[in-house]
Image (cartoon, rainbow, N blue to C red; front, side):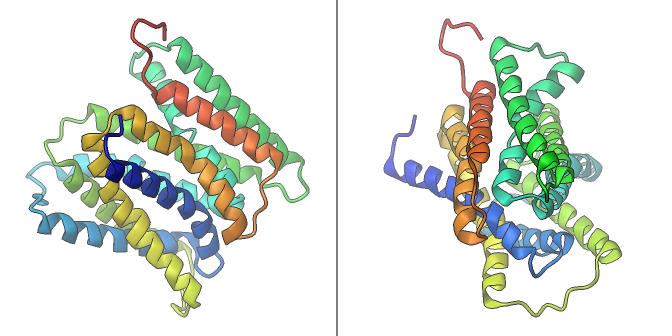
Amino acid sequence: MITSRAQLVALVALTLVWGLNWPLMKFSLRELSPLYFRAVTMTGGALILLVWYRLRGVPMRLPRGTFWPVVGLALPNIFGWHLFSILGVQELASGRAATLGFTMPIWTVLLAALFFGQGLTRRAIIGMASAGAAVTLLVAHEITAMAGRPLGVLWMQLAAVSWALGTILMRRSALKLPTEALTVWMMLLSSTGFWIVASALEPAPAWRFSAPMWAALAWGAVMNYGVAQVIWFGLARTLPPQASTFAIMAVPLVGTLSAALIVGEVPGVLDFVAAGFIMLAIASALLPARPGGRT
């Protein structure tokens, strides 16, 4: 349980940072292409984390023989998730993209059952049904809407699957690295990949942005990739899993509500219904069962 005001403030701050980041990404794409956006913000965040953790004495050196295993973890966890999600944000309303991206816990359960022999509980089945209902609602709306972007739904589901696969591989990894060091290296390697892919596929940016755009880039680097990661690791050491689960559950709702203020996206009833289904799905997948209860 949350035992101090500082933990509560940190949990709320984390939820707000992650939720607000979705419409801020959408805003940034008005002036910068998606792959360059990822390259810039992720590089900045990785360097901030590198300096922060070095100053705090966290060993950052990669032991011999760990480079390629780290690459294998970085591809789905960081590169795949951030690649597909930014393509999804480009196509969809940012709140809707957030809702679809946070089907990740359900994909984690499904992939673990299909490929790693973990059984499906009743709660997991309820979660998958809830997530499936949300995705079906949003896909149907994107297909029938005059300006619908069903491709964006596909991008976000690929992002969720990539994140889910990365989560499973992280759990099964035998790497003996501090989590902080592993995260920094995955971000450094992925940001390098984004610079390479962006330079090959997108025109070079002019680097002449408006003041709000520079602020959005700073938010992405400093807050989303920097401060949020520091808060997350701090909470992970002191809070039980169910507390951090509530933060994850609230991110799509914060993203949907804040999008109206930041990019002028007015969510409809369908968006709130879908967000509700996703919150139920996340709760089914991540919240622990009651002692003695059936799962």
